[in-house]
Length: 487
Image 1 (cartoon, rainbow, N blue to C red):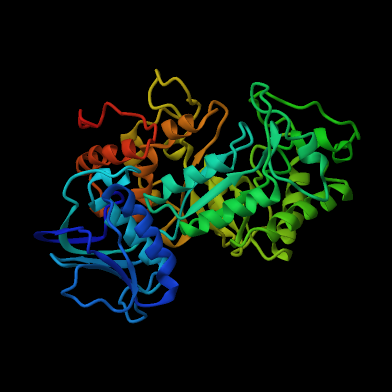
Image 2: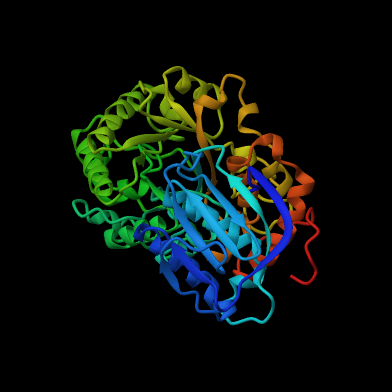
């Protein structure tokens, strides 16, 4: 199981899925999750798995999903999974906890359960009791669709894959120098013109607002929150090419297909800029049910220091006006932020410390451990190496609480593993850089550090490789892991 559960008590027997197995629920709220479970189990087994709305009789062969406000663990993602020879029960106070428990149950089954074709075999699950809850409430990965564009189908596939590891947030990087990737109805040239290229000169592309809403809705089925990011005032060349008035000299910039950073900036002294920013935040916030809006703020080297501070101070009020909580890369802590804001640490500890001193909490994303676009080794065909070479062991053996002395557990809301896509062109490329490192980082976010063990993780990851194969995830077969030759 990945991530490793909080508590596991084995009872040394087995439960077998059979054709007469039913799925029972104790309230209609759980019917979508029961249907999800049936859709997961039915193709490979060929069994019917009828759904019944009742409290299951313990002696009846069933899988029971059970909401109970009296369950002792009140964390909305906490659950208890109980398995005996006749019956499986997942209990939680919230449907989100039931879903996390279903991912654990899924991993207890043979990897062939992921097959879309009927398979022969005995569908056995080891008996025991698992009681579980996450260490951090915010466990995220980021997908940059600006350097290279990825469509709805690819993003949905990514959502399905990350849900297996109990990731609960997907941060979408929606704008950058190389392309603007989301429709803004009040500023249509952002996508008519600014979306037409990507790194290397490809055709680019963008999400309509309907596309974006479809992604948000799909992610919600997997209890994953979408966090939109519009990077500003730097990383804005696509916008500056689309609307000349956003430049201080009123001259449109050429579209950009390179990978250098830090050369672009909105004109922070113009009211038109703030009208633009307010419109963008308003339109995206209106179609984002999640609580967060990410304003970027990193590497804005073409903005003067004071102009940068004035810009962030003004934009953070726009985020709040639109009912969202601001997230910004660590650089935004130079401005007047407070406890209502989140900062995302990626590089400079002192900047993150400054944010915490102002009352903000932090998302931990250290580039030298958690950046998924870094190479595994010097021979990796795609990826970068400016932050570090990050093999699977390096991705696993770090502790958010030991990175910066001044940052304590109460300061950290969670962690995120970003994937920047300068070298990433296909869904297979995404898989290759994300997996299996995301599994390692997911365990850091879920499992207490005292229960983590590299050798134990290697064994579990090796077994998990069979599941990734069944899911057609193009993962990197790290030589640090003794993968089963039959995978």
